[in-house]
Amino acid sequence: ETPQKKTTYQVKYLGTMPRERSLSVQGWSSVGLSLYSQKKQRQQHQESTIRLRDEQIAALEADRAIGAQTLANTRMELEQMREMYNEETMWLGLKVQALDREREALQEENTLLNQQMTAEALIANYAKIIKKSRFKRAKKTYVADLEAELYKA
Image 1: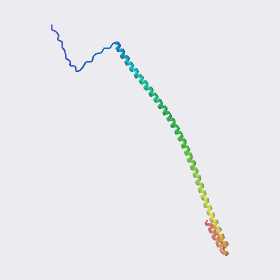
Image 2: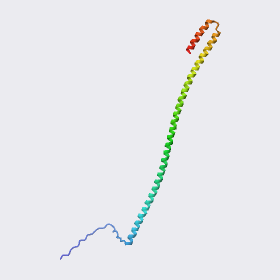
Image 3: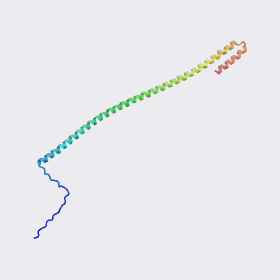
Image 4: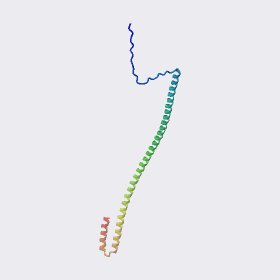
């Protein structure tokens, strides 16, 4: 019989080999408790962060609601002021038109009065001339001139 040859290989290792650790049941339970504790702490931290964010959101929503109400009130006030401005502008426009008509009427009346005063002054002046006149024939010419002036006026 021939003996079997065993082949051996040489492996070159370039570092240290990790040591195997064996944990007992007690070791595994403490690792499990430690992981559970870490997860519980992380969960509590996240819940706390969520509560904080919810409070911030609620505060921001309250501020937004106040801002929206303020904006609505301001818009309503602006609309009221616009209506008052438009109404006042309309009334002032009507008042200006009435004053313009009154001014035109007064100017016409003034023109007529000036014309009447001029005509009356001319008549009075001619009347004085006629009275002073010594000739009867001259009076007729003055009367004709007076009538011509009256027609001009």
